[in-house]
Length: 323
Image (cartoon, rainbow, N blue to C red; front, side, top):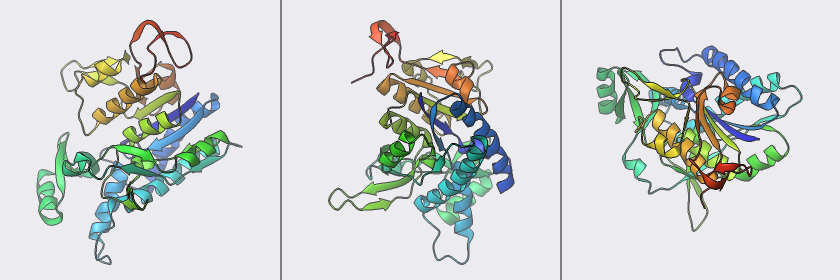
């Protein structure tokens, strides 16, 4: 099978942890072992990753650097996180998969310059803030902040991805049987001038799960795995008795109305991939990618069965991919 596996930036740097390199290296090592199990089982794998904590840290450092006349823009900082996390993943996967080529690819993602997300920031980046710190950052630096659990965090625009600039390169590497790390942090956000073809960076962070779903669709992947720091999607999250979902449909998943800044985009991405391709989408724990694929853990998302339908492998009972 051809699989796109998306791992969260928060899974590599968890809440309350110091953003030290050694901390992230330890989490990357654990993530790579889980991902390597997919390759060892005989699957082609493309890995994407989040970058919310990492790009937030770099943005904070850039804004505080007295040597700069202006902080670096988010698209450039996103490229830096691709290099940092990409090299850590590539090193660990190369060690775990001797004889297998692993390539980390700097990847740009096209977005619509008129996307309404530019006027409604929702993507969390950076660490947690107290209410006082959030007000101070809003006043002094012009940040937009929103509540994430008990604390506040910075939010930035997160336009939907429309194209992957390096798609052909990813496909070529896969055809050569490389393990590919691509579209980190959702890809470096850019717009393309329709007249000149010029590509420009934009001040935003694309959601990595939505980019992963688009990448999986464009690569004709059989499965999209969204690997995070929870074991399942839960119905009634935040209630006294949340219920883990083992299997669900895109329609049921969308009806849960999950938080927009966290599980919401993951559910949207999984539902979109399943709807558009008829393939398997699953949301599960980062430490068990193979189990999430096999359905022994996590939440499996498939289109609803219907009489006479066929899935992408020709098996009876699953709805055909939408046209």
